[in-house]
Amino acid sequence: MEYVYPAIFHQNTDGSYTIIYPDLPGCLSEGKSLANGIYMAERALAQWLGYLADNKQHIPEASPLENIKADQNEFINLIRVEVKDSKAVRRSVSIPKWMDARVTEAGLSLSRVLQDALSVRLEKGA
Image (tube, rainbow, N blue to C red; front, side):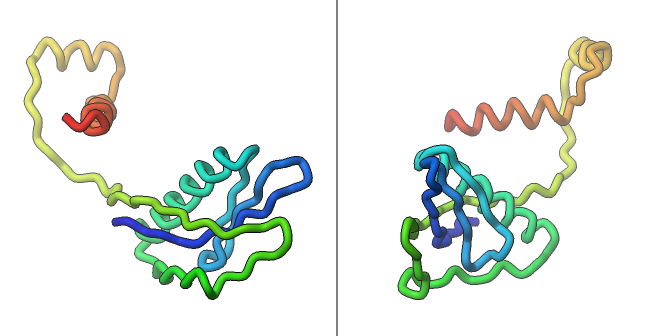
């Protein structure tokens, strides 16, 4: 599910940024630069909303931009994130016997290897 929330970016004296979400008390982040701040704001928002969703807690509506006020040394930026359902599902897969033996010998988690490989493959769009 996609979400867009307004974030307040406060520029600190050292050039770094502190980022808060007025609609999500306690959700905050920091960035060493503006680019890093936007990246960190996205990560914080995704983790915060993911936690709320996973724990079946209420996700508040985002406030309209005109309702958010910025102080001196601050600006408002919209942050967009996609929160994916991270609940595990059971799937039956088949692999060659030799591969299963090697996975066991290596002490690998077949589920983790499959998740990692699928993540890489899906990011490439294949």
